[in-house]
Image (cartoon, rainbow over the protein chains, first blue to last red):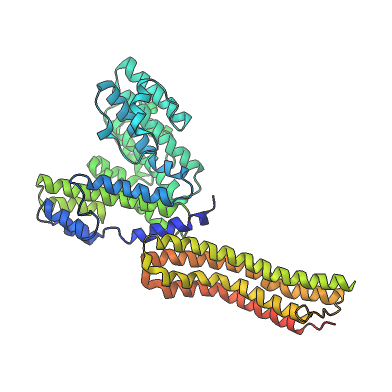
Length: 322
Length: 159
């Protein structure tokens, strides 16, 4: 598919970009007196439909975003790329719910390329044909069998997390859209760094670390394993020479700061699509920016409901949304 | 031999109007797609996007003008087709190539610039003037080749 096939889609996305909430508005929202005042503010800018039900706002926005992308993108297959992490998260959720007997519907992450209504049933009956890729089928099968035999949920989670990163790695290697493949590379590397630091802190052995990490894009997996085995300081020194040094250093201070840094970095990479006239990159950038907006509004509304002090909320929100 | 001269002259006219027309159709089509994307979200922008969509259509018009001048010159319209030597036919054919080739490519590239301009005004409606200026710069090369093709066709003696 040629990048100019995205002309309709990109123009539509650009028109929607102008409706994204500004940092000033988010600040105003965080300063709102209470939950009702915050909702009223969102109604005035049309973010919330005045007839919408309480607690449904976020889900409606997520679904509207996905509808917009599905209606506009000429090649629907590329949208599956955006669902990879949600898909694997949903498989983990379904496995947990099959084993615990709980209803999984309220825990699923959207959007997803999987048929969520029948996901638990497919796993329970070990019928993996509805999964889109062979690697997803194999990972789900192994994870479910592992947890059934060993009763170790952590191992199953690890198998699926590594499979998700390998799926992103595959997209990175074959995707011709620069911004999106950069985002995939960043997610893979930053997730592996997070895992490696945790392993080093918990003094895990090389075999465990090798199983917990996927291949990397811009750092060396072998080196991550060997430095993690050598200890936290050795790993810290190795990471200080990589392009992830700033973020890694934050993790050693506070893991939440590292997560913030990762989110901001993804948005920073996505901003690069501002100079791209056609193709999938502007679509992908809008997806990440809109998701960040939805997440921020969700955070503010939840904080208002819980009565979290405005100053604390503003500090947290403005770091993520600036 | 004279028929072959006529064949090349008419082939030149066909390429001038055909290639420049295909280029324009592609350019206008691309811009139209972008315009539809914008209009699906902001219906009041029609007046702005139509000015940008028109721009890549001019190359087809330039090719049409050159073809008309050539066909008129060889007497197709009057019904008295003049005798044309092979050399004259090839000269007329060569004279049509600048607008045929440059018209084809410049219309496509102008379409890309105009479609990108539509994405620009989707975010910032005040940028219409700048978007049009950017797209118009591509037009310059189509105008230059129109002049060359027109003057060449006009000044080649036939009959």
